[in-house]
Length: 83
Image (cartoon, rainbow, N blue to C red; front, side, top):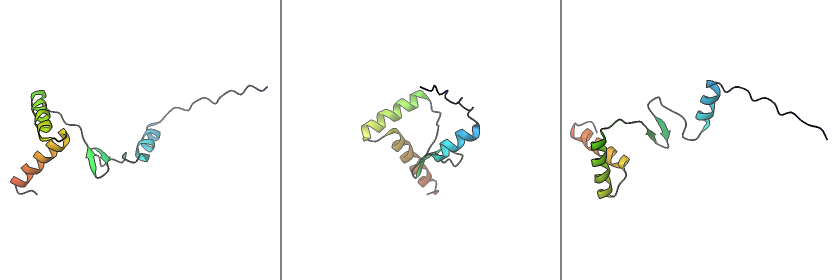
């Protein structure tokens, strides 16, 4: 019986990581967020009290937090004539 020594793992480079992420279905980025189908996932910093209020309202309206934030932003843009 022959004993085979497994090859030593190669170090992972930044280019390897980028290739791996961009190869994922939702991995391509526009620089603003991560693509999720036709939408982009972003990070948002928000006051905890405001977030609690938003979560309660979203639950009351039967929608997700994300949908509530999008709807509010859409309505503000409409009111300013931007949409």
